[in-house]
Amino acid sequence: MHERLSFYVKRDSLIHCLNPLTKLTLVLAFVWVAFLTPYYWTPHLEILFGIIPLSFVGKVARSYLNAAVRIILPAASFLFIMQGLFQPIGSEAFFLFWFLHPTRESVMFAFANATRIFVMVSSFTLFLLTTHPSELMSDLTRRGIPGQFAYVIISTLQILPQMQAKAQTIISAQRSRGLDTESSYLKRASALFPLVGPLVFGSLVEVEERAIAIEARGFTSTHVKTSLHDVPDTSLDKAVRWFFIALALIALALRIWLS
Amino acid sequence: MSIINLQNITYKYPLTDSPALQNINLEVNEGEFIAVIGPNGAGKSTLCYTIAGFVPHFFKGEITGLVEVAGNESSKSSLHEWVLNVGLAFQNPFNQISGAKYTVFEEIAFGLENIGIPRDEMKSRVEDALKLTGISNLADRSPYSLSGGQQQRVALTSILVMHPKVLVLDEPTSQMDPIGTREVFGVIRKLSEKGMTVVMVEHKVEWIAEFADKVIALHNGSILLEGKPQEVLTSDLLTDKGFGISRYTSTAREAKELNLWKQKNLPVTLDEAVEGFS
Image (cartoon, rainbow over all chains, first blue to last red; front, side, top):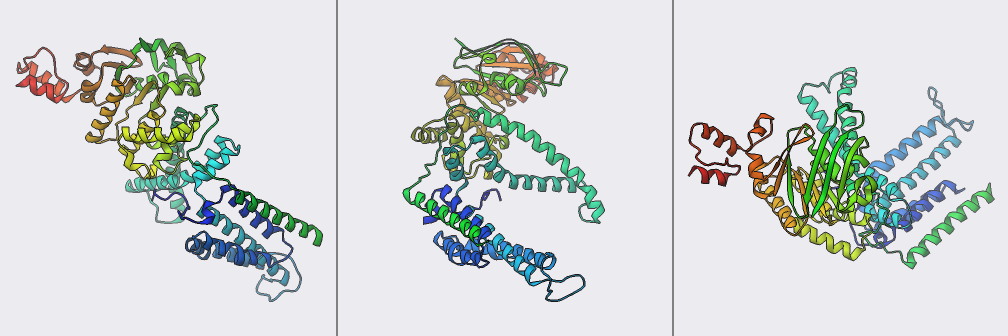
């Protein structure tokens, strides 16, 4: 299970070749436009003519659509139902049931929000699928983000699955000594205590050792860091970035103009 | 010429009452291979941290005495300069993996990236280091998918690639099988023959007898014995103070009482024992 610690799918595609910053700009522009647009149909256009085609261009359509159908769509639907039912706006209810009274406004609002969230999560998924974390880190450090900051982000991404695995080991160890994890909720809740201790304290000790280990490898060195990976930044990258920045500005202008 | 020079070192960790190291005097010559032995809590790791600069720069606490490596004084240097001269690898390999890299190759390049080595030189240095420790075949694997022994080799390689003058190793073979141990000892001996100074904490006394130039026995934070492996490892003092000793030594000692061991010196390794009994 440790073999796969990132979402990255290795493919040879145009999207994979883009600079990480370009892809990040693209993602942020998508999200920005989805949230700022005055038209409710913009997120649909983004999904139909932006995200889905891009997932094919990036040759990760299978992984993306899989995630979209299994995770993103259910989450967005849940958001839609909750907000549609409980958002206290509008006056004319479609129907009344017990204390639920969805109105035209609340349903529209919920729909717009759900599609925005869908765009947001989808574009980040696409980003993670096509960007190698090491390349992202190299590129961001090269552009002047402090090494410590980049380290925190990237190591968190890796350490979470390890913590999960360790928690599982501790649970198995405690269960083999008779810890009850399957009866009533109260008992299970009290069973959490002997699990949390080793996990938290163990992690603290690990942090110290890891700090020593990276320090021993010159982590706080005052030299300008170099990077193993050459992350190209072409004129195509710059063009794409400016295009999406312009698009984001247009969305902002429309928003101001129309409201 | 001595490359490591410790004079009268006494050190206390913060929030503790008794010193972890007491009056340590140690001189190591360039290219020497020193093994450190001792029971739990004897101060072996603290000694390693002191030579590697983490005591007192990382752990704080009170230190008195002089620590000098390659002509520099620890108290006058900062840790990030110090680690360029002294490489440290320790026991738990899992925590020595940076956690920011996805392949072994990247993992080993991490230190070189930090100290600003140009890309081409970095690649050739990583490749050489991988070859040296015999893990070229792991280069594209994720460091977390490896076994404990393999991770230990990665940890060792990622220090060696920095080309330190002094190598400090705190039980670097604790998770390795006998074949892995032999290979790693072989690598370390090769480096030591090329002139690298090595200080190594190790419990496997038979290996020490075969490879080390000098053995230091630590007990309660002070040096109990210091000398040639053969002398130190067969000393009666070790058994009294709870050190782990070679089974060949203890067998021969019993045999000596029964007048079955006729040699002057007790054996440490199997070969010596076989020779002595035959």
